[in-house]
Every structure is written in structure tokens, then in C-alpha cells.
Length: 142
View (cartoon, helix red, strand yellow):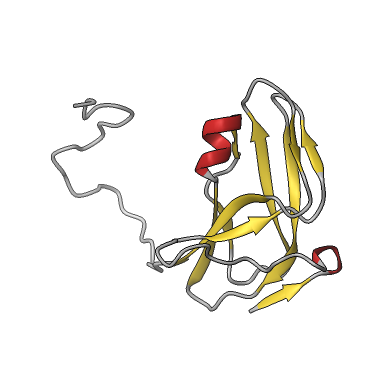
């Protein structure tokens, strides 16, 4: 369920723009400027209630990243199923100039995904695996 907030009046609700799209486009509810090297929280003008066992993943738009160096800072950002506040997008500008966002611009996408729930148990030793503690590039690049 989506709730339009006062600052979202007149904006389209999040929607997929093609039949094969994985994400729902998120739009800016206000005009902002993202200075070079800075981060800005951009409101979307809506709140969402997700079913238990689901999350919303706020992801970057590839065109903004490629053409302007603007991306979602905490990608993917998580909207938990028990969160009821306004959905916001943290944009960061890695480009070469300040980036202007107009009200209504598509700034990110929301992908809905199931969340696996497990019970974590403490142990003194983990079962061995081939990889073991190798990480951070230990498997190579090719």
C-alpha cells in the first residue's frame, strides 16, 4: 500500500516504466541541488506499507550514474516492512559539476524483494569450506 503525502500531490506514484522492469521509479518531491562531492536526502512524497517478510531496495538509476556521476549513496537502501515514514533517497554527486534535480524527476528505483529469516546461533567454530577466510579479492579477477 502507498500513501501519498502532502509534498507528493500531483506527482505520479512509483511505477514500472516497462513490462520487464524490475523496479518502480521513484521521483523527487522537491527540487534540490546536489553539490559536487555532496550528499542530499531527497524526499519522494509517499510512504509505503510492505507486507511482512518483504523489503524495498532503493537502487540507483544507471543513466544518472553514467551521464552525471550521481548515484544512491547507501545502495541499496532498505525500506523495512515496519517503516511508515516518507521514503527518501540519499543521492551523492561523484560527477564533475553540481547536479540539479527538478520536482518530478526520476531519481532512483524501488525493487521489492522477499527477506529470508533465519535464526543465528553462536558457535565456537564454523564448519570448514574451501574458501575459508579468504575474502576481499582472494578469488582473483578472472
